[in-house]
Structures are given as C-alpha cells and as structure tokens.
Amino acid sequence: MAAENPPGDGRLVPDDFDDDHAAFLTVQRVAGADDGPLDGATVAVKDNISTADIRTTCGSAMLADYVPPYDATVVERLKTAGATVVGKTNMDEFGMGTTTETSAFGPTDNPTAPGRVPGGSSGGSAAAVAAGQVDYALGSDTGGSIRCPAAFCGVVGIKPTYGLVSRYGLVAYANSLEQIGPIARDVAGAAALLDAIAGPDEHDATTRHDTREDLDVDGHPADATSYADAAGGGIDGLSVGVVTDLVEGADEAVVERFEAALDDLRAAGATVHEVSLPSVETAVQAYYVIAMSEASSNLARFDGVRYGQSGGYDGDWNESFATAREAGFGEEVKRRVLLGTYALSAGYHDKYYRQAQDARAWLKQDFDEAFETADVLASPTMPVPPFELGESLDDPLRMYLADANTVPVNLANLPAISVPAGETDRGPAALQLIGPAFGEERLVRAGSALE
Image (cartoon, rainbow, N blue to C red; front, side):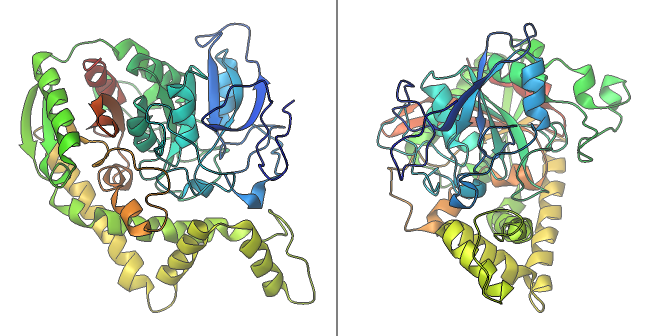
C-alpha cells in the first residue's frame, strides 16, 4: 500500500519511490497475469481511469478520497496482458487543462524541459514515461490530452479512433469526444499497448462493431489488426497531406522541426503535398462549446451526495450542492461548467450549441475531402514549445488556443499519433499524423518511419 506524503500534499507516494517530477498521485503496484504480451512491463494509469481498490481522484479535491470498486476495461486488459500497474498519475482536474497545473494536488514538472509544463491533461502519464519511471502509460484524449503531453515531453502518444478502445471506467468529461490511449517512449511500444487495450466491450456501446471492408472482416476493427506488427512496415508511396491551416501561425522553431520531420518522411519513400481544412478556423470555438456543455451535464453528479465531499445540509439542498462544489472544484472546472450550462440554457442552445455541432459536421466533411488525396495528414502536434510553469494560468484563452492543432481530430472522431520531431531551445517539438477512421495501422507505420 502507498504511504501518505506530508499533510496537505494529498499524494500517496512512498518516500522511497523516485518521483522528483511529481508525476504520480498514488503509487500502488498491482501485478498482472504471469504471462502475456506485456509480461514484465510496467504501466502508469491516468487518475481518471477507474482502478479497483486504488484511489481515483481525477486530480480534484472533490474525489480526493474516492476508491472505485471496479477496474476500467482497459485496466483489466492490461492485467490480462501481463502488465504491472505501478500507480495513478497526475492530471489537470477532470481533464480540463493543457498543462497539468489545474490539478488540486499541484503541478507536474517536465522531465525533458525542467521548469516547463509537461502538457495536459495527461501530463503525469507522459512525464512518468519520459522520466523512465514506467515502460508505458495510459492517458485520455478529449481535445489533445494524450498528444499534447506526448509532444511536450518528447514521447509518443496515440489518440485512437472513437470506438476503438472501451471508455468503460473512464470518468466522463465530454463523452462524444474522449478516448483512452497509449503513451510510450517509441512507436512500437505505443502500438503494443494499443493492441492490449483495443477491442469491443459489452460494457461500452460506443465500441464499434461495424464491417471493415478493407480488411474483409465482420466485427470490431481491432480484432483483425496487430498494431505492433505495423511498426517498421515501411511507407514507400505513402501520400502525406500537410494541413497548411495548422502550420500557419505556429512558432518558428516548431515549424523548423516539423519541416525536418517531413524531409525524413520523404527520405523514407513518402510523397508530401499541401491540403487545406478551411473549417479548422472555427474548430477551437466549436470544441469548447461542445466539451463544456457535455462537462456541465457529466459533472452534475458531483454534488456531495452521490459523489464528492459533503456540503452539509441545513434545509436547502441547492445551498448544500453549491457549498460542496465551491470547496471541491477548482477554478478551471467551475469556469467550464458555468460556460457549458450557459451554452445549453434556454435561449442560447441554438445560438451556441447547435452552431457548434454544425461546425463539427463541416469539419468532418473537410477531413473526408482531404483523405481523398492523402493517406495521412500532417501538422505540428502543438503550435508552441512547452510553456514555463505558471506562464498560462492567468490566461485561459491562451491555453485554449494552444489546442488548435489537436481538437479537430476529436471533433471528427479520427485517430492521430504524436511523434517526437526534435528539440527547440524551449523543449521538445513533435509531428502529428492524422488518419482516417480506424486507420491506426497506417499511422503506426508512418510514425515508426521517423524513428
């Protein structure tokens, strides 16, 4: 069992466990099966993924003492594959943030760029992998929350197609956008972890069971694919479309590393041309309206009665709920819940939420057209290098705009991979590759060509 840190810290990390970067919130080892494809591997799990008898806080004071009675499907699959779960990693509160600084338990430092953020919201998972504390980690990606920290920490992260991996046991932030996915030091490792967790789940109706015509198989796409086998498969003749809309305005040093990565793809046999996604201009606005609206609904359960710390009761339940949420939620969570509630309210639903869904539909159409001329699409993962710790906390809009290159993928329910593309003078930069639905095998081949 984990030993508690000094009072007020809230982390359950033993004194003899090396966690200089504060990547973990709870350290508690759970061994997997005696054999399996991940036998002997260690895995960290983001703290919004349910683990039986191990604290799951979502980085929030609201759930500081919550211990789930069951494992998420992905955790069960890790154990079956032979992996050892080491513990739970730090994250932005309820997944709301880009820096892992909104956590109620304090920030995580970037192991590859000390003094800078590790990205978010899965910053603890990426930092644990980058620091060599674990072999692999699980994160969740609602608008870039796997790819952003992977990019900032110089590791590999995969955001799967919506429906490829079960969401059962993931504490919901925005149901229509989020997916659990792998983080690893290289593409082959991320692909192996994806093999272990992907597949249909009777507990989750969002896992897809449609027909893959290109695989000539009925059932779930993961059943007929080995993602790990795709690593190193070669990309001769692969067509890469550079999304110019996501390169314009990016930091000069990031663009320089991005262009060098494209040269590496050309050298490996790929062809590169430019494409445009005009609707990405409104993607960030649409994403935050939809995500905040879904968050306002999902977080309604945290009222101090069903979940969370009690707000007391003096005859007025509304006052009790307000007291519990005032104490339990951080500023960023409150901001998003309030904005989401406003967007769904009478008189504003059509003005904001419906228009955001229309923008989402246009974006999906733009992606479909782009894939008519390209096998994969490319952009910088993040338009900027890692922020300095504390740099963006007082400017939420700046933090939201940093997601410009990642949120379109979630709105369109597509897969994407972030692969390291070298260093800038302010930390790592990365290349993002986007594939068509259930095109993870193609992304793994392309990503591994950069290593």
